Length: 76
Image (cartoon, rainbow, N blue to C red; front, top):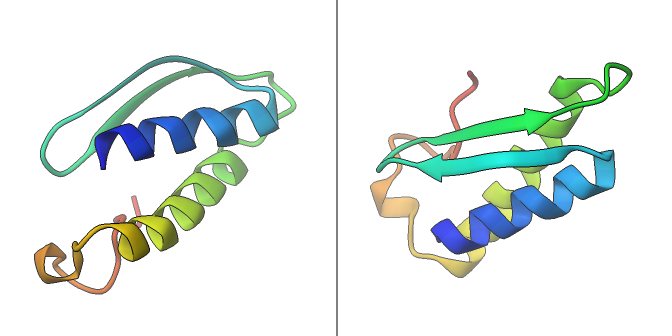
């Protein structure tokens, strides 16, 4: 799952012209260090990343029993 999330982050970042400087994770969260052009809205990038990765993680990996609710990502 970690590899998938990392690759998906790179794909979405490339779409927005964002450079992913560093990506790592712990058991229940990820850390992103990105270089973003000032005219790119960070919220759009994060929304697209969380939305597309959530759908695909739920399809590819058995995570529903491990989630606190039906959401893969928190609102924060």
